[in-house]
Length: 84
Image (cartoon, rainbow, N blue to C red; front, top):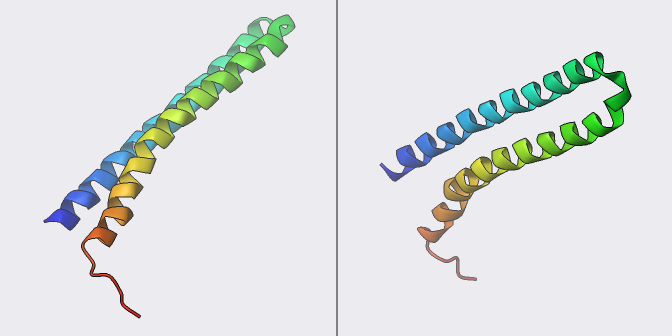
């Protein structure tokens, strides 16, 4: 039962990373549209696009890391220690 719950948690984190990918696509799409409308602001908009990309990616990492931690690190707690 614990293994099933771990798998469900990993699947939920995968869905969250897909949402982050959509967010990154929206950030870059909006950046391209903005530069097309006003090319003189390209440098400033590029900085904002990189900031939006980084923040969106940070959210994805915050969902992925705990799921891998639960998936692999907790399984070590239930195993007996190996003796030499």
